[in-house]
Image (tube, rainbow, N blue to C red; front, side, top):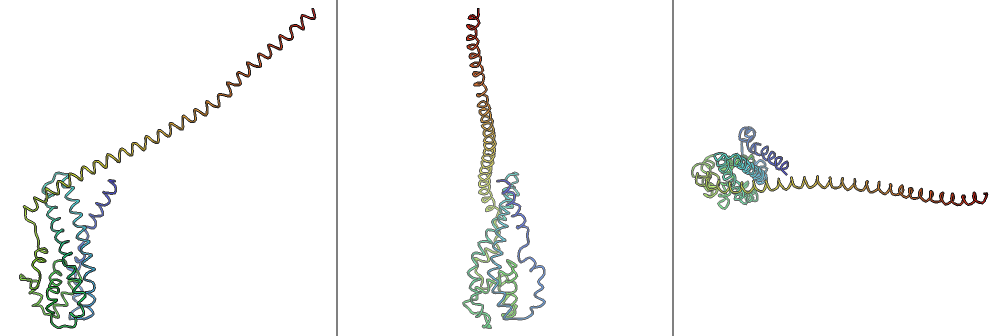
Length: 278
């Protein structure tokens, strides 16, 4: 049980420390050297990848959340309250990011569905203004390659001023709820309250693990005792077989006595013959 737990924890640690899928995109945007103008095929290709790459980001954030939970549990076991609160704060932020991704998935799918319209129209259609602005805004939040490249295409089509209005302080056409979720930072009161909840869950987990450990040890001992019992029964079977082998020997002793009696009788029969001679 514990070997499996350690392997799972190690896997989570490795995955959690892997870079964000958009990390290299942020550091080395080499595509900007080749993409210098609006391109229908470039736009079509990148829009088609929006949802899949967002889904990859979703999985990555979930792994980060799971790893933060493991780290919080280790901090609890070491009685490190500061570390526990630090990891709890991370957990809250990752949970908000997961909720944000779930919130914008339908928006991204709608942009993909309306890609043909967006390619044809010179100006952004009013009915798509919020969805397009959301994709442009999230490009810098998630650093996902396809989002960055779609944003770059919109900068050619709608102009740099449009991008500045969306990504600036006002966040034009972007839902306030989405902005709040993307920039969320928990306060000390929330972290403290959540830390209490996490501590209680850690206590329960510790009890469950201790119980599982005892049950595993008990099962191991009972397994050994069954082996010994089987060995003893085999020995008793051998002794029974040996005793059965000895029984015929006893019978042979009796046969000896019978033969001796027969000899006595024969000797007695011989004696009268001697008397007759006299």
